[in-house]
View 1 (cartoon, chains in turn blue, purple):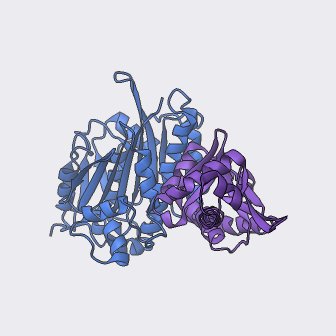
View 2 (view 1 turned 120 degrees about the vertical axis):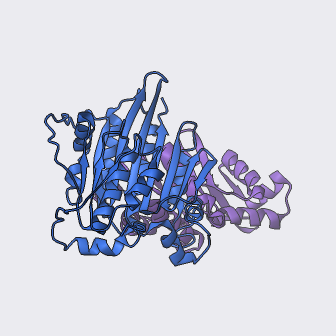
Length: 312
Length: 183
């Protein structure tokens, strides 16, 4: 029996805390990862949804050409949902050495040990120099203290090490503000842990520096969150994402909804953009230009991707 | 406000999350209550880099609403030295709260309005910036307004947390003197 969707994982999440360790199935179901998760997200999710309920999913990472924070976040959260659905950990195979090292460096296998693994040994680890980083490994946020006392200061410390050639002080503030607002949404509305990671990318050819911020959670999603307060106000999940971006909040009028508007303001300058993915919808904002998709494979929870073009 | 970070045991330079805002609110409100009547308190944000929307909503938006409501008597407050990021946060919040008006912010470059001020108050505000304090009669004469109109406009700015007000005894009786915050 193939999976129809990844819905109703939330109830499984509660059982997962008390469940025995996932075992190994006799039946394995192998899919090929796309060359780019971001560019081929729809196809990847459709493949995932074909996983038989009694099979262990194996993802052949051979075709992957690069991994960005949004790709890792997608992999991180979707494999969790899959493992909860099937009861078996997801195995990653044929990872390029650099990708394996990168995932290890981002604490992917450490944080996701409950639901994903690889048999490939990581022979040589990238050195972690806390004083000179271009990225922040995946951080889990469950409570406000995780944001105020850990995520925000940590992200600030990293962004400041990039120096004024990458980010002005106002640029550092923008990165921190985006992380704080999105993480607050993840734990506020998701009621599940949120996860955040950031990475700096420098294009010598284009002479630009981009900061990629990925935040995800496996909560109820934006549609459910808003419907609890407003009822049925939209036809598609993308409609609800648009409402959220325009300030509608699960806390009701006047009590919230400003965080995403804040993030929109920060991503308004040229070269920056914001994408929200929840349920079957996604909305990407490049400045004021919106790209809306309404019929994508169902994604549990919410994922936010922000790319900030550094203001050098 | 850097002291506030310490008192909340937040460390760092960022005021974030609703929960910390809820913890901060009583401290800020107490500081306002301890301010002498008809004076104003300055919340100096020097040393603070970001303030997120949830924190701001639980603290300063709430305080502004309560000041406008008269819950702090004649005490007023002014924000000062906001970083560009923090200022944007206040502006974003006030975009959807036009009924609350605006925050007055004292920046190194001068006074700034974060939010919405009624168009007919701009002239009065400009005059107050120039003269620092005016009476109703002064305003009426300078802007060629009826006394009632001048009185209404000054009262509106006072109610909106933009001025203090003190009573002065004059030959003809008493009059209110309005002074713009931050000048």
